[in-house]
Image 1 (cartoon, rainbow, N blue to C red):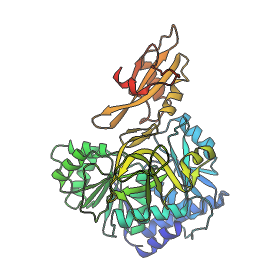
Image 2 (image 1 turned 180 degrees about the vertical axis):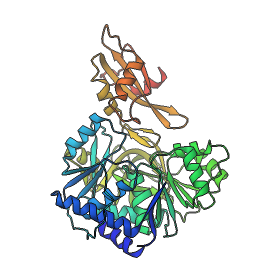
Image 3 (image 1 turned 135 degrees about the vertical axis):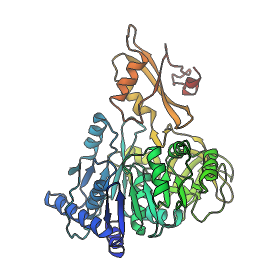
Image 4 (image 1 turned 90 degrees about the vertical axis):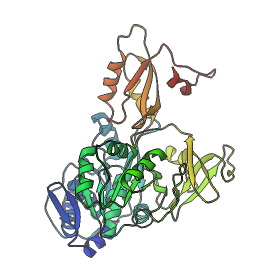
Length: 459
């Protein structure tokens, strides 16, 4: 991966690679700073295959640290700046990094990328079993993903300016808004933190051509008085969470620009998407398999479903993860004979259009972030006055889903709902903790003792 980024730097040396409020770096300057960072890592004893944690928010320093780690032959692990201390500690324990980078210096040095047999990336996703999981992604997977992004999905050229307002510690932002544009020789317009007014102003005043975002961003931009998109904007993309058809239609009517909807997750880099060249835009479909990706729809019995029938979505992709770090059992449960079992229920038309109809595995999609209920439940159950906890997603007009918890307390407990919200807020990232806690005498259960979560939002 680093060698391809070096080749792009040579081909576009004097062109702007990164632009942000108050500064910019050309491709030559970015490669030089990444080279100095790689040299520093090597001097600190970091060897090819070692893991390097990046704890830097959206900025040129994160980009330099990422490319520098790759040039050193290390495995880069960007961590979400929103993580709380307990979450960060758990990830660091699992990751066991050889180095942790909280900043990147502005030095410059020549450095040719070192070969490595180790993964290119470890990206952490919320754990479905109550602990975070690190998806190990190879250099080949990262190259396949970003060539797909740059060529088929976004049709990028060096003339493009791609807005990077998504978190660059997450798969969608890292690849769609950063690495793919850099491979194409485009310019990345960095935004440290999304605000609707700030991004609306930027789109109106600067020459942004491509905007990867999430449904929540599009909704908030449409709520800005007078927002009409931007004079040079040619393409918007949604990911991380479903983008409702009504929102996509309203955005196009207001801005004149399509939102290319798609589907992906940390373990799979956008295997399903509309492409820039597509002329069709179907209300219920999230796109088709991108070139090189295979899909299966499998019934509960394990048989292949007929076209149009609903079953679990299985994906085989050259951009899939190799497995979870230190979690062989969880890897085996989702990666079987090269097919990734998504846990999502879907149907595929004879023409290949994919519609997601539900979820087989528990997952809450809150404003583009995945939240797995067992992780939140595990924190609630640490509270000394909590005996039972169940977490579900409930509809939210802006975020898609909100995190809601139903909690039973011990006899004589004094904690109230606000106390439990505050308890979770101190221990979970901002997108994970429940905004709504309902106290119940007991959770509804089946005859076998299973919590009946389907009944909870109606209580």
